[in-house]
Amino acid sequence: MTTVDSRPAAALPATVITPGDPRYASMLRGMNHRFAGRPDYVRVVSTTAQVVAAVDDAVRAGRRVSARSGGHCFENFTASPDVQVLLDMSEMTAVGFDPERRAFMIEPGATLGQVYRALFKGWGVTVPGGECTEVGFGGHMVGGGYGPLSRRYGAIVDYLHAVEVVVVGADGTVTAVVATDDPADPHHDLWWAHTGGGGGNFGVVTRYWVRSPGVLSSDPEELLPKAPGRWRSGHLMWSWESMTERAFATILRNFGTWYERNSVPGSPRANLFGFFEGLGRTAHVMVGGSIDDEVPGAEELLTSYLDTIAEGVEVAPAHRGQQTQPWLYGASYPGHGDPGNEFTRRLKIKAGYLRKGYTDQQIATIYSYLSTQDYVPALIVIGYGGQVNTVAPHATAVAQRDSVLKAVYLSVWGGEDEDETRIARLRAFYRDVYAETGGVPVPGEVSDGSYINYPDADLADPAWNTSGVPWHTLYYKDNYPRLRQVKGRYDPRGVFRHALSVEPPEQRL
Ligand SMILES: Cc1cc2nc3c(=O)[nH]c(=O)nc-3n(C[C@H](O)[C@H](O)[C@H](O)COP(=O)(O)OP(=O)(O)OC[C@H]3O[C@@H](n4cnc5c(N)ncnc54)[C@H](O)[C@@H]3O)c2cc1C
Image 1 (cartoon, rainbow, N blue to C red):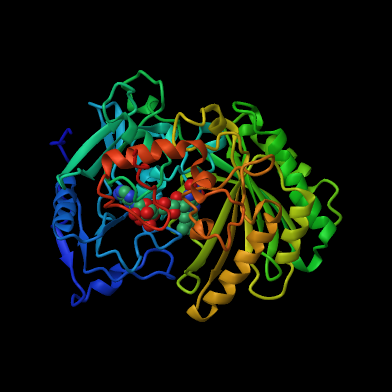
Image 2 (image 1 turned 180 degrees about the horizontal axis):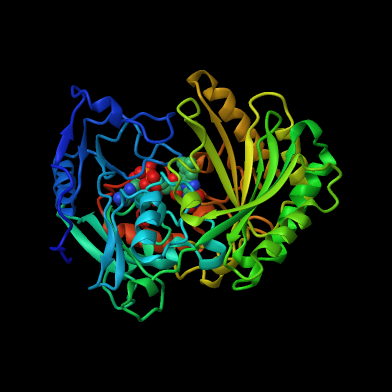
């Protein structure tokens, strides 16, 4: 295995924080306050060498270790009670151009906001990642991230050129390995596993390198997509007070149909990204759209999109508008995309890919849940497809390459006393939307499984997944056996694991 020598300088001294330390309590939760870990210690790391040493210490002591970058995991993968050593990667935030690799180097603790700002200010380029600026690049990339530019430019993993991972060999030796997209690279499979295989499975990522596939230039400004200058956004908003079931169904049906018809890669409408947001009785139904304002006919494209969504809706929207603003404002407002504030930090999420719009039966179920009185869950359906679907399902670990939408079913609340009710309600909502396929989005005509960056441990629970289709098929489809092979080779001792981690390969008898 290759050990890498040239690394960025340490941002902080290697630091160990134990339960008696006043800093300890501040280190236990990520973004989802439902989960608080209780590790023996937290190790703040800021170089690859520190990560190697930290993993080595944990392995020698037989302690279970987990890495946290941006802390935006929806499940308890880094805060499970059996995590004994938590590696805090959030101070590894460097972003820069590496001329030797002709690629941008990004450390895992950099948030999406930091990445967008640095790439934009330094070179006027960007990557098609998520909207929430506080999400960490560490988990986002390996989980297959996407965002407002994905219909135009693809999934973020389509830009992964190389990754440095600290792995543990069968004899317990800890090393840093660089794995690249070059098929001749002996570590090519490890690279592949980091194009959507999910965080916390194979080792600890200490650096990513990104660049546009197939570009031969060594000019950094040509090695990633050009960032937009101005960003045009528009929306239609209806209040729940005026909503009828028929109007709701028309909006959601129009929305799904638009994406079915307008997601051809490279087509003018694939430049447009949008979402449906149903927040239930206390709030509104909203459809948004956005587009790089420099795309020819941007305003007309957005207007026609909003017109199509509003077509035949018997209730007039309370608000309709369009605005433009400098791209970086929207793409990197601090906190952009994080739900609520310190009082709304308990979350449960469920998800699903959609190859086409919801069936009428599903729309009726969604309406029935969103129009109830208490503990109303929310539904957000997000535009996908376009350029994402030009990549073959096996070329990266992201297997879903013909979907046009991703759905997020969520509940967000403040107090622990609501945990049980909120979660029960959300589970019932999801189960009923997918009533025809065992309570989960089994790949088929409409659905195509789920997204590992929106993890939901219920998919591995036979009480909530009665489909007979295992959780890993829902997330990885036919790519799972290869992920297991990579797991067997790079984490043969099963050091890195969590509730939905890739299992070791089946033993050959
Ligand atoms: C409010 C919010 C908005 C979101 N918006 C989007 C969006 O627009 N698009 C989208 O695609 N996703 C989105 N996500 C999902 C997001 O991409 C995932 O939650 C992602 O995994 C978070 O990465 P993180 O580093 O912040 O999380 P963490 O909690 O730090 O880690 C998540 C997982 O990755 C592992 N991991 C973290 N760092 C490393 C590392 N260095 N090496 C190995 N494993 C590691 C962890 O162990 C854990 O299993 C959103 C999430 C939230 C909470």
